[in-house]
Structures are given as structure tokens and as C-alpha cells.
Length: 207
Image (cartoon, rainbow, N blue to C red; front, side):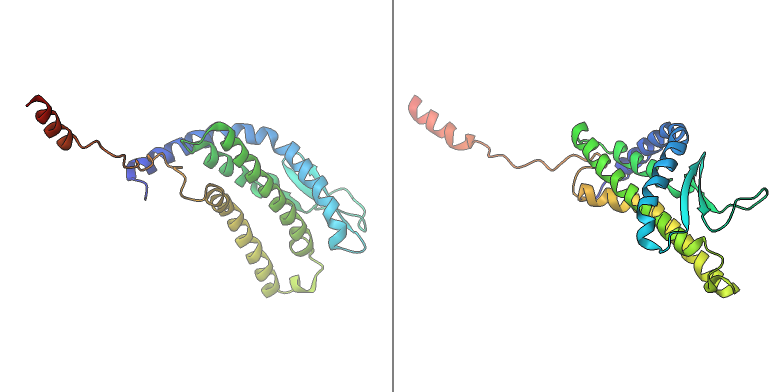
């Protein structure tokens, strides 16, 4: 059963309300989450490169890439990721789950924990891929304009896909059929007593 227009508008209103309530909190926790992502990605990076050259570090609202083969000098341009662009889908995911209705809070918190855990793994993988393929200008593929276009085009589409990922996870965890938009479940037909048969029997007894 598809949700009605009224249910969709009500869900959109709840989603926007939760989204804007969580937005200030997200900016507060971003530096801490950046450090968590950087330290987690540093565990995986040795598996992706040998010898290990790159190290990630969370710095305020950014995740910077530090190279062990290049000494840091004054005025040196440091590559990295903008934190709030990397994991903006966290707030989208939280708003989608919390805006859903007719789901008990215990189950809702479980779904939110699973969804945020999946997004965390995706963020770590995104950083590892970014270090290997998007943040190394010495690669031959980046020496010409066509190579740069392919690499940055891929990065753009990965970024767009990461913002749509919360919707996919949300629909998968709720299995679509749950009343996430607030529509009432269909009432089951209950057997109705046959009064028509009882009334003649009563009349016979009176006679």
C-alpha cells in the first residue's frame, strides 16, 4: 500500500524538523569523528600500500594526509578531505530513522545503530580509496587533463552516491513494508456473529 500525499508531507515535515535540530550537534561532534575516522583508516592503509607512505590525521573540521617521504615546510600545501562533506550523510541517516513513525524506540535505536555502523565502514573505505586514487598527483593518470577528469569525475559520483546511501540503507533496514510513513496497517477481517440466524431462533422459543 502506497503512502498518501498527506502521509508523505507529514514525513517530510518531521524529517526536516529532526534534520535542523541535529545540524548544530553534527558540527560540534565533527572534529572528534574526524579523528576517529583518521585513526581507523590508518589501521587499514598498510593493507593498501607497501611501503606505507601516507598517514591520515583529523585536524579540526578536516582530515589531512601526511606523507612520510615529504618533510613538512612552511607554506606547503597539504592535501586532505573536508570532514563535513565526507560524512554529511550521517545526519541524513539519523533524520530518516528518527522521523519514522509507529516504530518502537528500542527497535528504532537498533536500526539507527546498525545504519551508523554501516556508514562508518563506508567512510573509512572512502578515505582509503581517496588516499590511493584521488590524492596522489604524482600518478601517471593525473599528469594529463583526461586522467584528472576521470579521477575527479569518479570522486564526484562517489560523493553523490554516498549522500544517497542513507536512503538505500534506510529502506533496506525497514524492508519497505513497515509503516514508516505513518499509514495505518490494514485491519484484519473479524468474524461477525450472524444475528439474522439468532433472531428467528429467539422468535421460535417465544412461540
